[in-house]
Length: 260
Length: 235
Image (cartoon, rainbow over all chains, first blue to last red; front, side):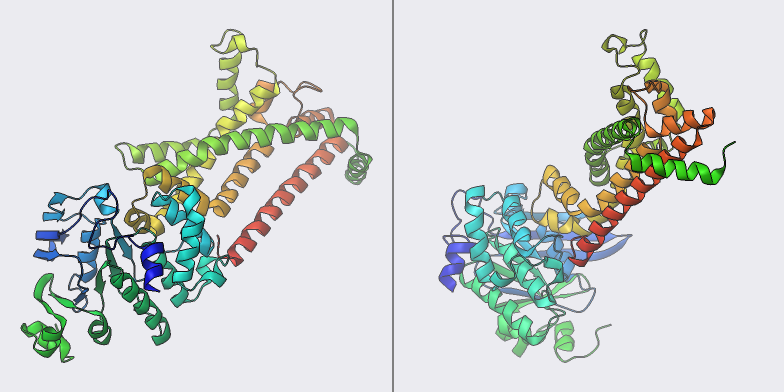
């Protein structure tokens, strides 16, 4: 299956080496990034660096700034201060196209499953003659072949999120940002999404996942970024974070104490 | 004054007989209306979508202006088009006055703001839902507009329907620029006005019944299409 991912949906040479003549996006660096709304500092001078390979999971309580951090990285929001660079350069359209996003609530076009993928492939600039083949490979990847002609918005929650995942992978991203993609899914649907994440990661796509689910973080994370109050409270390898959290906020969070 | 019941029965007899003059009037009405609505949609849908998606100085003023144009008095539009197309007007050499083309121009001017204003609202609502997704995909402005127009297609049918309702019922502008010339520019609404003034209620009523029936038929078709699209989660 990993071979299929690599050859069909994801960068042919894996994310560690940039495919074709695509621009180099690594490292993705945030320097003193702030994001303020109505005078309230929601992201407070955050600095971090994302490098390819290891899977990063962002954790933290509600309002910590997890989703905001993802949106800022994806360029959906602009920081009010600080800089976000890709490979040392300010982000431009070409660099941003190496980044794909999966949202907590799938936003699907009012089209069939195949129509959603056709739209994505066209938007990502895949030549027309290659689209049908790529679409079939993506459908197989998401195990949605039998639903190809079904209207996307009547699919179950799990199927909709699988479609969102393979649509994001249609971009052949080097960085995949996932904002609580299994938040409202049952265990079976969650397992299917985690399997897709695992395949993408194995094919070399850098995964940055936001989750509230400690179990999921333990299953998927190589590194943990723990946010609290708009600040990066802790950044550590997953094993050491779960065994021995350094910040008081992380300790309280993992012990299930209310962080007020 | 004819008996009301007799006028109705004569009207139905006229419709059922397939009277050639009646068919000619209906045919011209439909040709002018469909052409005007098609041109208005070709202009108004992209215009509405651009107003919904683009951010530029004066956008709000443009939206207010387009919304205000929805209430354009038809006789004023008729007068404006008349002045443009009259022999002394800037487009006089084209000799379009008192032709179906002049009527199409007048109706297009009346319908385009309706299509643009209503489609702007429809597309703006959908844009709110799709905005982050399309931006995260790196969709360019033209791609965003094309996506929104296609995905809002069933809602936009209602917009076109509103334009068609305006065009079908319009009399003030087309009578000024068309002149209501028999076998040339006579359409249903102008004929109703003329025949009523002459006291020929049966023809006027017959045309009125057809006009209302057409409106119900088109509305029914569009509603049917929309509800089946909604069942398929495409609307």
